[in-house]
Image 1 (cartoon, rainbow, N blue to C red):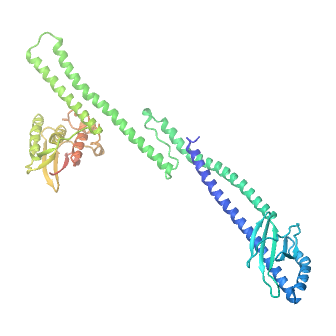
Image 2: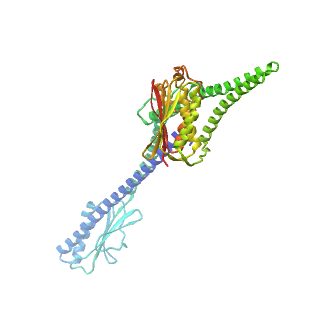
Image 3: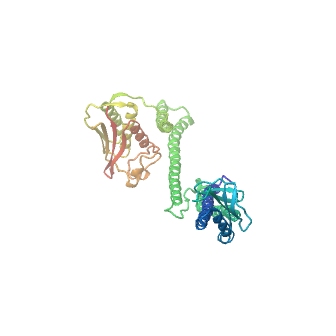
Length: 466
């Protein structure tokens, strides 16, 4: 049962409400009890004052203690019986009882209560008793006036209140718990529906989405978050499938070409040495292409696991750039593409020179592949504050606007852009720019596309200067 959020919410709600109601009921009971006893004590204090005043009046009027006490006893038995029917009253002088009046219920005042100059209140059994000491002129000794009243009615009222509270609090908690459970169930119903929707979504129906009944509330925002997550999963899944298709093609093509070349040379009789050398040359090139794809995949797997290590050292970035441009000119010669390089100033840098060389060569190879015959590729190196800026510009067919935000995503290939160029090569598996951005980032820099139009593209590498 406690595995349910609804049950836990209901228990917490009922528990907090029960605690609040118990504290409230206890407070009400204590306040009512104090008020009841305060009214009772006020009535007893008033009767003490009246009795003392009556005794003093009779003694003064009869000009003596004895005749005054006789007259007081008559008044106590007649007038004060009607004035205080519920109270038992007694007047004592030392151990002598001057006058005693029981209550209508037969309650007698306690003659052993210690009195003071101010009223003193005590509870004796089921009665509330008050006593005060009164000193009168002409009296041989002080009088002790005692008044008592039964607590039966008061206790009955308090027991009635206690029973009402003991019944009301559990009923209120039970009712609130039931209502709270229904409200929690209704409030969490969208969560259950979202959970069921998510459970039904798998690789076969990633296009399905969670229903968003109220987009502006918290549950609606949660549903929106689920949908955005599903969109990212669908996009990643689609790219993964495309990547698998691309990699399968990239791996299958060199393997197929190499295998065909070997089969052709092994199928017939002995061939001239030149044909064997030509077949081996084809196999070597296809294996080099296959090795490049596998190495790219291996490098990306190491970057994901954090196992890739940099071999940092001080090197001359300008010299590395010149050597890379020389190597790229060999690749560009077959397409009659001119690769030029500005005159970089001396540029000392700290980093992995091999990875930086791979980054620049990757951009140059990418530019050469997407530049038509007779085009140009230019490389420039400048220093901007504490960073070196390497720009690679080509006169290729450019990248479509809608594809530009995605070109650095892993496994992404701009096939439509390639098809626009008659001279485009097969290309790689869509890993080059992703690897290039990683190389720039681990060196504390960045790789960005500055611009790309139908007249060409410009990529910029930013690296921290030594």
